[in-house]
Length: 267
Image 1 (tube, one colour):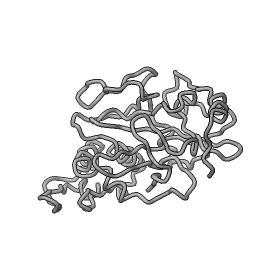
Image 2: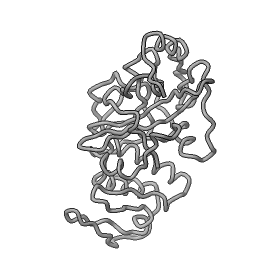
Image 3: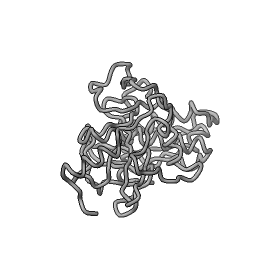
Image 4: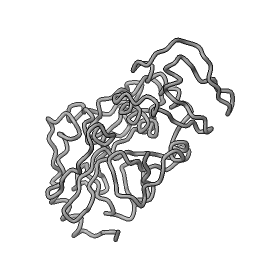
């Protein structure tokens, strides 16, 4: 797709976006109105995309807090705060937040066998074994399952399992686990990710499409230190509010990281 730049294009999209927002909306779908002339894409019921679009939000104006109750050092990057726990340890950072959302959706749909993530070492940690009372013993880069408790497939058990995943997985392991979507049409649930130390990851939580096929999308992230997951503002083009436009610039410029358009991946 031809990269579109220039003030004329951005001014037009600024008019279309209108920074439309319904402060009383308590879900992503109801808080953020698509740009004028654009319509939300249809999503299958019970899909990951449908789950993300319905994520609950704290009231408009809520600050982003870190895992220890403090304030995120930047309060200018978010358009909304997602109402989901962050834990009390410095674990649920960027890639971890992506995995948390994926796991929460699969758990809600009772698709327990699909809740599995790779450690950076390559070890596959699956929730089914965890729910049977097995735990992961880590010795250097060697991981083994050890039976230590009784069966527990509760949501509390899921969060304990995820704390273990967050400790030993990150952007590097997740970037290897996901498959490239750079040549595929964008979908809700796609992840822009650069694996490394630290690397970064953001997730597409809503998507609208104009009559001429352009994509307008919303992004969510956590960051360092671990903090509440939040919907991002488009600070590179504030006239667009929280919406980003695919191909509007040479790179995808989020408030705290710049991605290449080819960094988009999915499960």
